Image 1 (tube, helix red, strand yellow):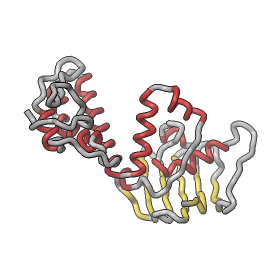
Image 2 (cartoon, rainbow, N blue to C red):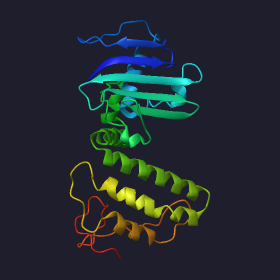
Image 3 (tube, rainbow, N blue to C red):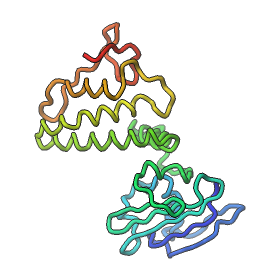
Image 4 (cartoon, one colour):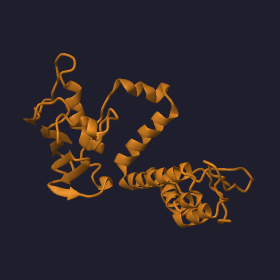
Length: 243
């Protein structure tokens, strides 16, 4: 998979460009703050349709009303991928056809970015390693990405309700959280065998009958193995029927 052509408009400090990529490769030379990293960021953007530096889409706009990045690709599943951001709305097209869901857009363009901050994967906190694995697995299997998006959305809504003291509203998200969490933690993309009786329906039934939530946290009653030890849903292999 190789980039054949890049078209970028309104992206950070880059001048509008439409350039063919040289087949032997490309080396960027220039003074600081001239846009070398911004160009690499624009090339990488259609991988996950976000900045590899963690910047929000609004921060990537060089001048109103927005920006667009279009890649023409050789040897990939798609011939072209385009992302347009304007008015706080993002529009993605694959081969000229609009794609509604992000999960259906990922995987048509793949690139690897080597960044100074990558040393944090070894020396930094565990959250950096989890995010890295989430990105890799999301690119390798769209089912994982869909489950991850659903889980994060349900968790954010549930936590927001808890912060507002709306316990009844928070419990309404238990089913969605359990369904997405069962698929996510069950390793749909890694080929790990799922635990017995850990289908989304059974986990949803279990979570929906958990003890009442109080304060800002949940009173979880994790299932146990036959030897009486507690276990996480994705690690336990001897879970019995849902209580």
